[in-house]
View 1: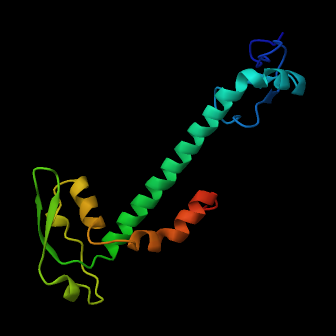
View 2: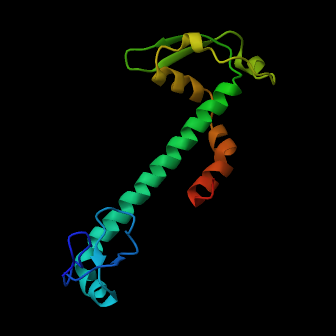
View 3: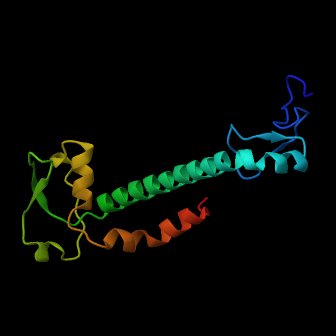
Length: 154
């Protein structure tokens, strides 16, 4: 049997020095004394192992999405080009943005300061930063999204 400080094999109770390779980073990963016990336990551990892997993937993808979103908001704020002069929030939480000049004129290749004084809360700020853009976020962020999902950003 394993001592108190040592992990015990979930199959035979002996000293365990191995963990499931697929979910080894999770704290609930199962410990084994050797390959024979791990193979014997696989039918029992299989579903839990897949669930742990899916949870870990979801956490990683959520982290990537948050990084990309914050990066995009920062990018938009630093390259702001829409002359918004007033913001109204309707009862259904829709925003009405008032622009000082026709939009075709406003996109005359200049960058202006983001109108922070019009922001009442984070939701409004994020909505303003995403207003009047279509496929622009995907175009600008394509490379970084690809690298983040590969896990090669240092």
